[in-house]
Image (tube, rainbow, N blue to C red):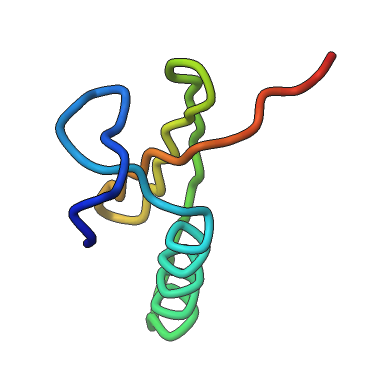
Length: 74
């Protein structure tokens, strides 16, 4: 990852992009489809500080991402 990336609200790792989350989700889907038995994928999203969400992909292991998002204008 590039050194100029913003740090997450947790302060320990840089934020990721939506494209990175979707790429991992597609990878997990392909693995689950190719698996010879039962498979389960679950997506969880948590609101963090202003303009960030934590996206957790559950599929045997947890894959955690912190992504920037535009707050709604509601």
